[in-house]
Length: 158
Image (cartoon, rainbow, N blue to C red):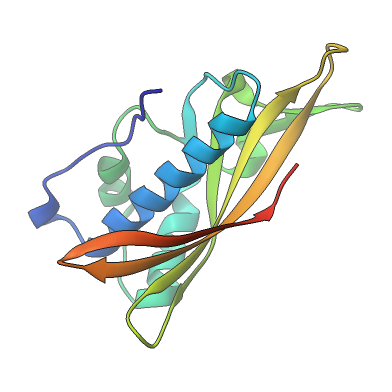
């Protein structure tokens, strides 16, 4: 699997963006590994990332800055735009993986806890499909100047 996240020059970006990119990458990998063929694009609600960073750290992330950090291959859509439903089923557009930030919390020791949700399309043998929603709780610690995911708990699974 090839991850499509951007890799900007780390010296010129806000450190919180590195943490958020890693959280999205972990959620994407988790979503793709549990889905039957989620081979489409990575779709991220970048607004949730910017708002979460601002709330937890006071760091304001601009729309363009956040978009550049995640690269051109990441589609920026809200959950309402990315997950479609009709009267009997729901699915992620273009068979992609949708990721949003639910919460970003700073700990007293300088670590962060991230709650992130992924949604994929679960294809069933009958030919029907359903949205598969998973939520992860991730803990990140700063080690030697880099954010490292130290804990990964599955909070919600489909």
